[in-house]
Amino acid sequence: MNPLGEKYLRKPFLPFLFCPGCGDGMIVQAFLQAVDDLGIRDDLAMTAGIGCSAWIAVYIHADVLKVLHGRAIPAAIGLKATRPSRKVVVFTGDGDCLAIGGNHLLHAARRNIDMTVVMVNNQIYAMTGGQVAPSTGVGSRTQTTPYGNLEKPLDGCKIAVAAGATMVSRWSTAHIKQLGRTFKKALNHKGFSFIEVLSQCPVQTGRYILGSGSPQFNLQWLKESCVAVKDPSQWGEIEAQGKIPVGDLLQIEKPEFIEEVQKMNRKVKEAQAQGGDR
Amino acid sequence: MKGAERIEIDRRYCKGCLLCQYVCKFDVFEPGQERSALDYRMPTPTRLENCRICGLCESHCPDMALTVIAKTQGKEGE
Image (cartoon, rainbow over all chains, first blue to last red; front, side, top):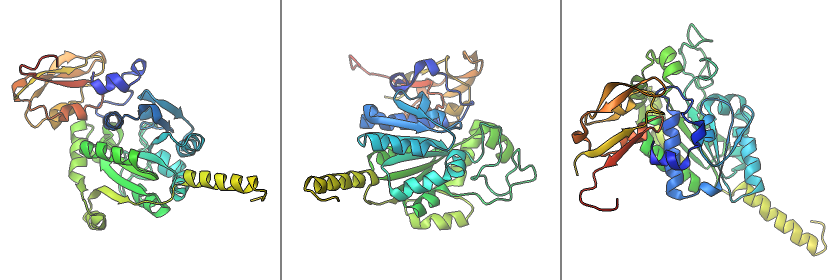
């Protein structure tokens, strides 16, 4: 086994329950590489909801909270609020984060809470049998849209930017080295980091949407449809060409919510100590 | 430094997706006949002399089953 796996994975849980050729295992490895390089295992706390990608957190031998469907971000806020020195990472899928947990994403991004949300996007509800998800493209045939999907897909990155996240990136499993670097950046970033990872799902997306269940075909599809851009202003241009722009979309500094709460706490306590009521 | 000393594929975890063969630019892997513990056909690194130790196969292995072990030319202890 890979030395990183020897060091960081929970051995009794192995092998991964992911299907052959699934991108989630690659994300585990890229994330572990980032954790290993930064040496933050003891501070790491992860939460995960429901879905294939939520299992990523469970295999990593660190603090993990597996919670209700869509509620990974609120649980992460709790972890962060109770001990702000923690590096909180949320592993969530596209259905988990954009559909049932969409509201939580908006409000955590709005408050700029220091955490890293890794949204693994495989464009379908894969674990439940291939139903249409908020990120499924127009015209895609799934189990619940046998004549093609009519709904426009939801773009998680743009939602995160609009809601006020301070770091937003999108990569795919075909860009695994860049993804590892972005994980490192996000873990060091003070504020809400949102990373969308386009991942191949040969069994559901591959067979029903793209037309082949071969992992190689699916990775090739990601490689061909993603265009890495350095300048975020080019994202619209790439989208107009029908391709998927990947890269770092945003990184800015804003006051962090938990720090602000602590500051206010101190201020109020000082005021109370001096006799005032606020 | 051309060529890896060996490429280990853990037969407990390999699911035979052959992504290692797909990402390898130097044609090191071939689909093999040996079956892993999960009853998938495992790839075999037949052309080890081609390996440049770029690590692509290792980082793309979805089951973290693959390890590339570099040649240690004369260096002792490592």
